[in-house]
Length: 217
Ligand SMILES: *Cc1c(COP(=O)(O)O)cnc(C)c1O
Image (cartoon, protein in one colour):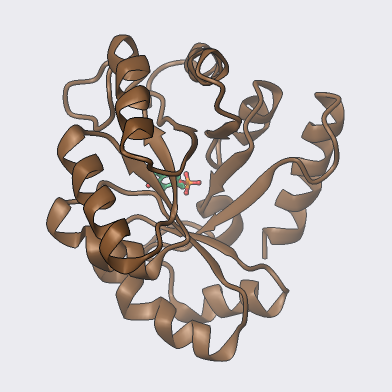
């Protein structure tokens, strides 16, 4: 299992960046992985997991919660407004707040449910047309609008373009967060989490390096 190795690499990256030990949260991205691999990580004591689909999360995490306490589930995939209620009841954090309609829907549901997950705003740092997220130039205004709705925005999230060096995207996300007084930075995946930590990531989302390759077959 890759968990022990990845945790050691995170500690080393924290230390290399002269950041306190434990300042980076490892989100083990369990999407598509078979239950036995997920249970192995649960049995090893890890409790922070990420899923990118509400449906899939709803299908497996309520059962895991019956056997393991204090599971901290992060929703890291695109969220449709009609799934927002279910997402808010399942997850402790949502990383993909990316548009006004979703913000107003979550604000309304938070009133109704009397609770709201921690929220990260997704920024489309590469300005890719097919990718979710607010554009960098529109992010300050969107952050303000979310705060005006009393939403618990804790940070920003990005997924750099696959074919580009991620550093400039991590740096841009950190810059937008800093100028808006946001401390959370959800960035870095299996291939680049150490680099993300050097740029200030507080949450890294690591899947295949922990669980092995995903089998979509
Ligand atoms: C799947 C996924 C990850 C994890 O990807 P790996 O390359 O397997 O580490 C991270 N973030 C998001 C948003 C994902 O959908």
